[in-house]
Amino acid sequence: MKDIIVGRQAIVNKASEIVAYELLYRRNLLENCCCNDITSDYKDSQSLINSVHEIGTEKVLNGQIGFFNITEEILLDIENYNLPQNSILEIVEFDLISKEMLKGILHVKKLGYKLALDDFLFRHIDNQLIDLVDLIKVDYIDCTKKEIEQIMMTFRGKNKIMLAEKIETLETFNHATELGFDLFQGYYFSRPAIISKEIAGEKIFHQF
Image (cartoon, rainbow, N blue to C red; front, side, top):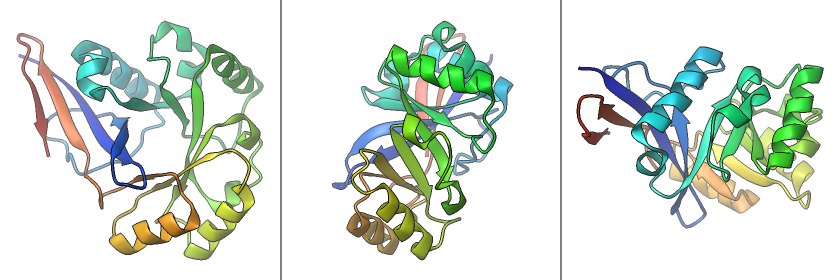
């Protein structure tokens, strides 16, 4: 009997209410469910999307918005993946953007998907994709507080949804709230959970 597995981590608003889930690739039930490493591997991203469909997007997302990490290959073939229209497509590798990927980004925007830059650091502040994305995820571990403050000053009034990720303490949550972040993600709110379905049955369960 084989298990189909998806990891997910909650994304919350300023009132700590769940408004979305980031979906995470997991190889098996024994893989550390507290890990939230993001994959930029095409096969892993493809397997994640296939697993979500196999389990059922409604069961996985529970009515919330899904954040999907996508590769260039998936972006260029997005219509064949049948993702929910309100999905947020996270671009993980964006230091070097090919002409094909840029065309793909413009195409998915026309389809109505929203785009996010993941693991955003201060060195990305002039990235060519900033004008094309709707949401920016700022890394609270790999950025200093000063860098985060400069990032927020740069994007103030520019109609971007700002998400503070890797929030692990009340202190960092308060700091991010004071700076004006819209959304938050990290161990302070919840660790990734495992959702699994047995192919031979319909058992869905969560492992925290």
